[in-house]
Length: 268
Image 1 (cartoon, rainbow, N blue to C red):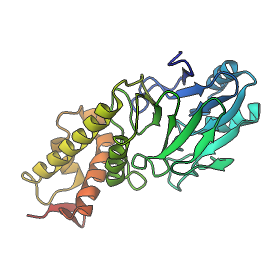
Image 2: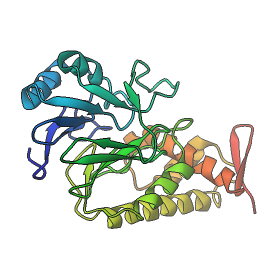
Image 3: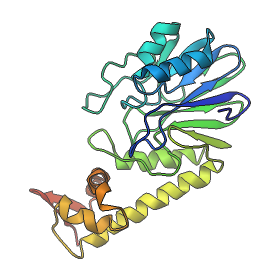
């Protein structure tokens, strides 16, 4: 799908509860090409990417190393010789631990692709090594899982961090953006409004956590989940439990709750 004059999108065949319609790979440029997020290790997706880039791929960029975003980089590099760029994987179970970037990027590092540039924006929260990439010519931000279309992202400690996530969302409000190209779903035309909406949503959820202590104080995670996520289908509560834990860790960081054994207690 042509997303803009410089950008095309391919979606991996990995739809699901956590991935929506699938993981988006973005091809940027017209001659020398960059590809953002090669997705899972899937042969049909590899062949689709190779068919789209031909012999013009020079750079493979990964937003982070969750297993639906970066594993495809190995086979794509082997087939094209393109340089792999990203941040090394943290040592957690849900990470692509074999990810080995040829060039490790940090915040504000720039990839000069000639007719266009891609600037890395470090956005920890969903993952500690999460990078968004800003396409200078179109003011388009490739957000991986930092912002998804149609859904909020799971913040899964210990690598996921709600304090860092909110700070990273606020940092986007300071960027000159025209559009967001998310890792899952369709482009978002109101980037600042979307970042602000997500901040407000997370803070509203945090308030639900605090209010839940009016029913149980102290409380276990399992006692809090159905109260805090009463608006979410019960089949999703095990996933929501991860983000609830991240909210509690943020409240602990803020000095508002503390952990007693397996129970959390609100300071009154």
